Image 1 (cartoon, rainbow, N blue to C red):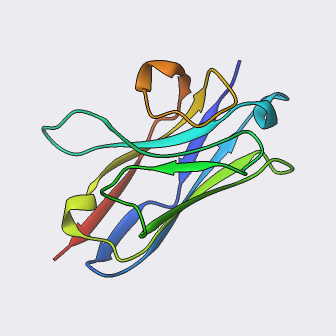
Image 2 (image 1 turned 180 degrees about the vertical axis):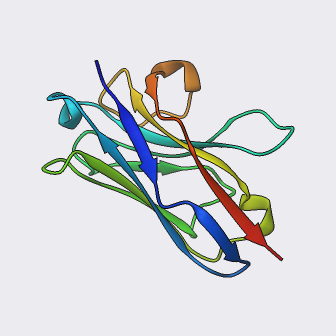
Length: 124
C-alpha cells in the first residue's frame, strides 16, 4: 500500500512561483516513476510532468515545459514540482501519482496510486 500526500499549494499572482511537494509512504518508492497531474474546474484531469525512478529522465506537458521542474529525493521519499512564471491557466487541483513502472509516462491509466490533491490558484 502506498499513500501520497501533497502540500505546497496556495494563491499566487501571475508570474509568481510555487513549489509543490509529495510525501510517499512505502519502501518501494524509489523503484517507480512518479508524476504530477492537474484538474481545472470543468475540465478533465491532465498530465503535467513525470520523472523516472532514478530521476535521470523527465517528461513535461508542452503547456508547462520551460516553466515547471519535477524532481525527486528517494532518500526522503518525496517528489517535488517547482512551478515558475505561473499563469492564470495553471489554476487547478494538482495531484501526485505513482506509476506502475519505472520509466516516465504521461498516461493516467498507467498510474495506480494518487494523492488527494492540493489547490493552486493563480490570480491575474
